[in-house]
Image (cartoon, rainbow, N blue to C red; front, side, top):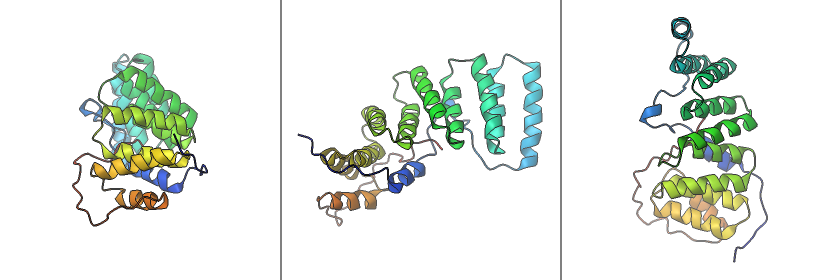
Length: 232
């Protein structure tokens, strides 16, 4: 039987853990991610060149995707969203366009729009082993305080990547916030058992609060799995 405890608010600790894991969610196919950090003059020059190419080749959705990447780096998130909208208009079935538009809406704090984009990306990506769109959707739902929805998405991620310790940590955290002590304990214990290191201290701390002792002197065998899974 599930044991319920008082439901806490979404903690800063989980949001920090989520945000700390928001870097690499693309496959090789999607390696040209939107990123920040290039000088303005270089970006302006690249933007002019790409816009000229888009005029010459009006049916190439990839050019608008690259234009969106430049706007994202400036950072001009509204311009990035508009460019991604044009890419989607030309190729509405490309999952990465919807995924990256979701990232842009996250940057602008538009959670409902981000959710819609990530749901579309999940639908278009299909049921392969790549968990990026689902992880992004779970992250967005957690930001919206939809804990059951976030749990469902991260459960699916866990089933697709059962050796990735980060999904067990996130599930433990979300179950803890949702007042499900037993599921929270299981999540944190599985995280530690699979060699999770990035949030080891936090997992041990929460398990202690939940009344479960952990042998901190036991050797830790790192999982070898990346704990960077979410979008920001």
